[in-house]
Length: 111
Length: 115
Image 1 (cartoon, rainbow over the protein chains, first blue to last red):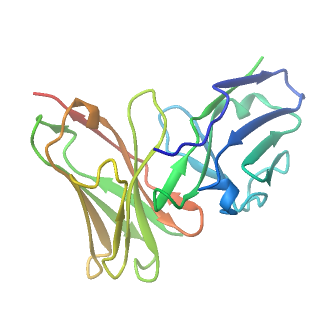
Image 2 (image 1 turned 90 degrees about the vertical axis):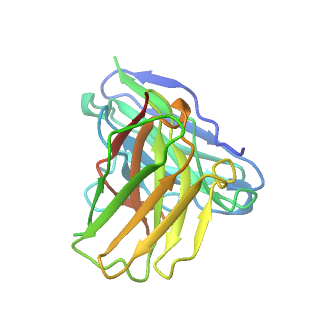
């Protein structure tokens, strides 16, 4: 089953810059389907953080940004804050699945 | 704004059918796709299936033989059924609206498969 691969964890000190990679294949990110990013705190539902590769919904701080190139995408958090400690998932559409595919998830820890 | 709420039994016996409903409030179910996502405890997110308000569906091939998603436009809700459940189906089940990205999401409903 298709999957988007993310690092299990990333960490940084407050104020630092961290990035989370999301690697797909030619049936999803490489096929020009857009990527979305979600933030999830323990015990709560995922919340949309970035949509269509690099767009922030209203209310999302501008320290979050997204990018996509070829079969990969990235989420960047600049000026890391304690409240950013959460799990992050990328998501796209997969043509071989004819449905949605999620990243494996990355836990962000603020040191 | 649109809000989604999952409802259904929290405990299902092995080999039985899991049934959940997602009620949409603050907006119409018309003209959108709607989806079910599940998350086993401590694990990642898995797409279960989609439904359009017309009733057209798409299912995850790994679950297709056991899953049925339906819609009731008169009640502004859609539903999920998973038959012949096992412990591997224990998860928090989320419903969400498809608007390009998945947004918004319901709060989630934990379903445990156990005798």
